[in-house]
Image (cartoon, rainbow, N blue to C red):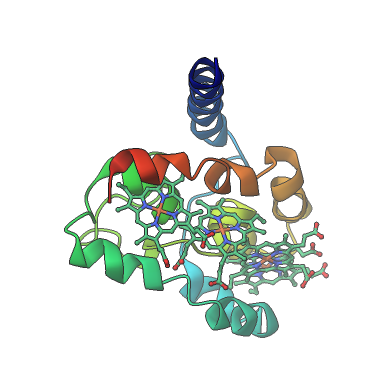
Length: 148
Ligand code: HEC
Ligand code: HEC
Ligand code: HEC
Ligand code: HEC
């Protein structure tokens, strides 16, 4: 019984995941992912906080395990993977690991013009609208099943 329940839960999470990555495609109009280097000049305070969290650590472990081109890992361990963001370490090195835009959404439109109120509103509400954290933090079973 417990196993069945776990299975049902897992399938639900997976379906939610697919919907999530699909729905991101239309978010924040035509904005693209640009990477943290573009944000840090204007958002020094948030950048310091972000930097102190060492989000890059897991990337180094991914590297050691030869997993930096495994899509299964990249959907949570890179920014905007499968959604016009991270593609590969060679072509989009600026979007490795979890960055500002993994939580706040693609930011080119806002970064190019902070006075654009539609884009600004998008940056403000993205986390809440998409219920963003649990998309990646929900199901650590993913890790156990990947057997590493
Ligand atoms: C050219 C300067 C500039 C750049 C580059 C920039 N921002 Fe901003 N950002 C601003 C300004 C100005 C505001 C408005 C601040 C306010 O209304 O309190 C803002 C607001 C925001 C907000 C909403 C804050 C709130 O009040 O909730 C978020 C989130 C944000 N920026 C994220 C980013 C991210 C992520 C990037 C990089 C992709 C980025 N910004 C790049 C200047 C910039
Ligand atoms: C569903 C999203 C998701 C997927 C898929 C995923 N991860 Fe993770 N991973 C996370 C999250 C979230 C954390 C942070 C966990 C925490 O610190 O609470 C993490 C942490 C890690 C860490 C760091 C552990 C540490 O102690 O710092 C490594 C290494 C890692 N993952 C490797 C992988 C690999 C390899 C894959 C692909 C086989 C993968 N992950 C797939 C979400 C995911
Ligand atoms: C782990 C997810 C996450 C990451 C990564 C992240 N933020 Fe945030 N950020 C948040 C949350 C959550 C809030 C609070 C939002 C709210 O209250 O609606 C926030 C708030 C903000 C604000 C509003 C002012 C404030 O301090 O409350 C700005 C500006 C901002 N972030 C910019 C950035 C920038 C720039 C980066 C990258 C250097 C970044 N964020 C990385 C989750 C994140
Ligand atoms: C794109 C997937 C993704 C999203 C969205 C996401 N996270 Fe994470 N988060 C990760 C991964 C992967 C790690 C592991 C990074 C590492 O250990 O180096 C992590 C690590 C963390 C950590 C531990 C960082 C530290 O200090 O070492 C915290 C706290 C965290 N996330 C909070 C949040 C919150 C709050 C939100 C929502 C506002 C959020 N995350 C959204 C993937 C994500």
